[in-house]
Image (cartoon, rainbow over all chains, first blue to last red; front, side, top):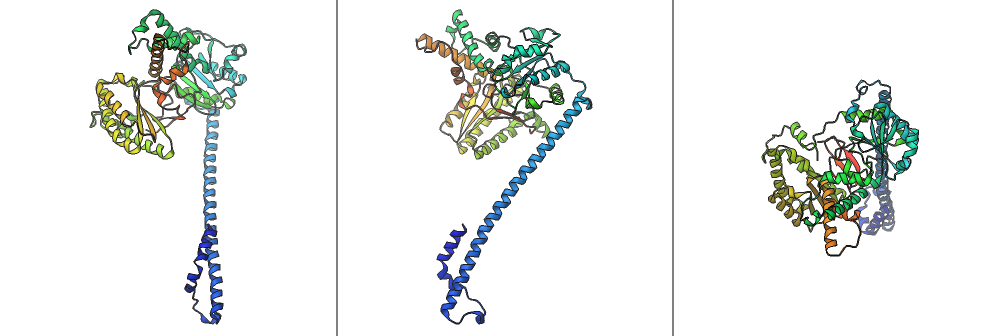
Length: 295
Length: 206
């Protein structure tokens, strides 16, 4: 830009020579031609100076903007760092029972817990440790979900290593179990299961003949859809009360949509940095929630 | 858009407003309009708002009536506002649960804005995700039945893609982010199907 300005100034130079008239005659050359040449060079110098000032001004503004941007970044990083330190400290205090309100959890309110884990983060050692913490807290029924089904494939290994659990059976929630029940789910138990359930319902009603009378009437209800889903998936548990997400973002990663109508969803961070105190805090927060269910 | 009742209580808005109780929800409506403007500025094309759940029919009859009256009033306002902003409006939900008047008003609004494409605003009324999934399954079954009747059936079974096409929310892509006001951490039967990869954000603001 400075060059453009300089060039445009130079083009207008001859017309502006007349404007340069120094007051002191004594320092000026006597001859007009020399005066003209001197005026030309003074003007050139002034034009360059203006151009440089403009270029420098742009650079200064750019530098200031960059500094502001970096300062903002540093401030935000410091804030998040401070928040993480505070959270870690709180988690430590909760784990050691030093915060009074977390000492007694109304764990009976938590009938069914679901845990969603990012597939890339599925370390069975961490999963088993998490299950042990949940067992210590008194959680009876847990559903482990990951998108790829890695946990489903490792279910025998997990059940073998974690002695305190059995595989979930349909009526388990109604019965008081001495051992924790575990359900394993993956992405195929969500949307694809709904398509399978649709086919199952269609065949059922086609055979019974009632589908031929469909004229916009609702021939099957939500409860029938729910039953069809349980049939196609097998071992499909009830709706979880609480869903804990262990992953980089607060996202349920395709957990069966039919089952999370009123489920509280809490983000716990990556599984590898799971904390016992954070788990207690999440369950405590759930026990304090009251739902109106639309009323 | 959660927290309307708490906001009204905090601001001491009357229970029976000018529209018979629906006045409490005016602030929510105008907040949605402001959000629509901001989204347009930011280049966000698809916005979906949860205005009235099927579960809300469980409220007191007079409250439901006033909410429906407020909705009718807001549809008229929306008709004027969205035309200025070139916003296409879809109404998603089980509109059979409403009166003919509201259904007609919703259809008019949808048709009047069909030509606009700068933004797409989907308003969910009489909506729950379970009802949406059930409706999509029913529609898919009906289409399958018709295909069988006319020997037009190319597929052996109902495919997932067909079920997804029959969803109320098929008018918009899956959301990137779902924001809930009011501080609650649940989806409350909203967008359960398309929210597999959505970032769920809960805000304490009313």
